[in-house]
Length: 410
Ligand SMILES: [Zn+2]
Image (tube, rainbow, N blue to C red; front, top):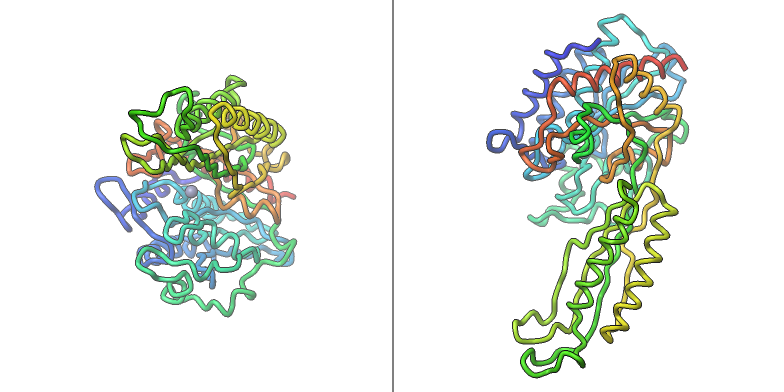
């Protein structure tokens, strides 16, 4: 069993770094506050018997040597960077609970055969440079053109921020993990949604990370005087947009209880004058589902309806696809182990998908992965009000410990 008092004290100490208000956190990626958080977490990693380093992508890595260092490593982790107006648990839970697991192994004199690593990945959140998952993509050699030239709001490039953090960007290759060198990846994370809280369950077993489809739709009609153009001959782009928003909502809710979500998050109206009929509307569409076939089906339904709605209002339109990622499923064998650990602790843990993405997403392309969700009070996250109880976090850490012990037998 893990030490829940120690775990809580680690959360409390970490919450002081980049603290805003009573319960908030602001720890930007590659910042002095993230460095302080790394130093604190590294001190706990060393207490747990790990060696520590910050690699050239700006990841903090704790390494516990196995008796057979040739074996692929069991990797756990998440991130210590936060949203600018974030909470104390997003990402932090996955790092601190993993460190606690290694502490428990040490206290029980368990020396694993394969090495264990705990990682705090750099810039998971992605708001500073408008693109996330930097560290987890980095170690897998998945960085893209222009990633280092992206700038933050002060005009600082990622390249400069990494240099200021002490990283050497010419050494990226040395820090990449070779294919086959990671046995599996485990991430404990707060749910960031209300499903577990509503079901009154502390722990959930993640089935996978749903893939978002991001579209930008541009509708074009005809501007005219709001006082004189008769309704029958109008080409009002905003009326078309309104119908499409309703239709997306209908499509995403046609199977009651299904995890499908559809959102129109932005709407730009041109020329945006109270007495001109809207000529042009640009809107974003976000459609997510763990079931890719269903998502494809819904996308087709949406396209058909957009075609019909635009015809009805005599609009023309263009659609561009900004992101199209597939859902990534957790490994069945890891889910089974997590379920068994929950049962051993008398926990009735439902399976649920993750709408947000996590560091597990890039990792899923190189190894099997599993995720444990901790209940979020009222489903609130990316907000100082984000809250998961220390009891729930301790339970989840015990599930993680049991899972690690089982995986170490393999
Ligand atoms: Zn997170």
